[in-house]
Length: 306
Ligand SMILES: NC(=O)C1=CN([C@@H]2O[C@H](COP(=O)(O)OP(=O)(O)OC[C@H]3O[C@@H](n4cnc5c(N)ncnc54)[C@H](O)[C@@H]3O)[C@@H](O)[C@H]2O)C=CC1
Ligand SMILES: O=C(O)C(=O)Cc1ccc(O)cc1
Picture (tube, rainbow, N blue to C red):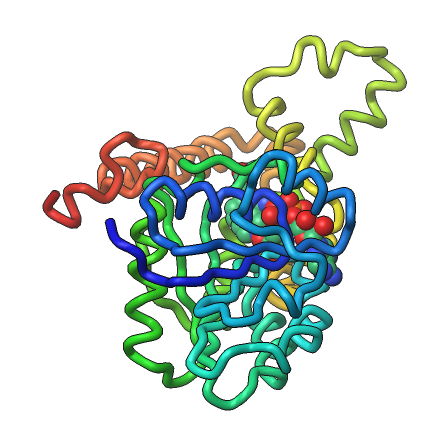
């Protein structure tokens, strides 16, 4: 693949920025990648491991002359970074982000975007429970979705280039409306994370009674919960604070269903439990049959006719 942007600046040098830099390098998608992170320790680590081509000591320096700037900081830090870099953005540049929630980022960053800069929020649906500059890897986005979530009209050429970049980094790209994005992600990612946090918290309480049995004998389902619950606390605090309405809506429905299952167990209503579990099993099978299981090795191929 050839160079899509001569200069890319990544602000925040953690899992996602690191993976982007390595994925761009893998295919030669950027002429030069600059980076900035708030802490000197993170910048030193990024320099030591050569995470980007040039680590800068200010966000302003990193974005100077950049054709694409991507904000890769926790959602709650987006506005402060936008204020910091706004006067230094090049006219005609594209400003994007990778935040897990979109309405809050658009409201926080949008007002600071200078005229002539194309603002295209994005969200790669790919990650791990690890964070920091040493956690990134080039394959993170392979076969995963990246959603582009612009508000209103946006420059076609700027949109096409950002789409090409994400495709070059291995992702499948789709477009979505911001509020719809936040509702979908509340169902598929945010509420499940909260449930995992809760379950591990419950187990931790139990552990005091049962010593280490909870961890020692934990089955695969619970191990997945512990992996998810090991995710970065700052990032997830910001996700819930910034997607409050959608998350509360989904948690409300979740609680209602949980109460119904609880009652079925108490009253010995096996039919209710069986019917419910049959319905959920069909959903999983439907995902696999539709070829929408992103963990499957050929995910997306059939759709794109490759
Ligand atoms: N971790 C995941 O699985 C995914 C995360 N995201 C989103 O991507 C963004 C980044 O997440 P990660 O890379 O996982 O986080 P991370 O914790 O690995 O990295 C965040 C980086 O931002 C820096 N930072 C924090 N506040 C800053 C500020 N005010 N100015 C400059 N740098 C600052 C930190 O020092 C760190 O280098 C978040 O908005 C998150 O919601 C999106 C998809 C997946
Ligand atoms: O590690 C996991 O299971 C994830 O769910 C990764 C993830 C976390 C946050 C996002 O906004 C998108 C993907």
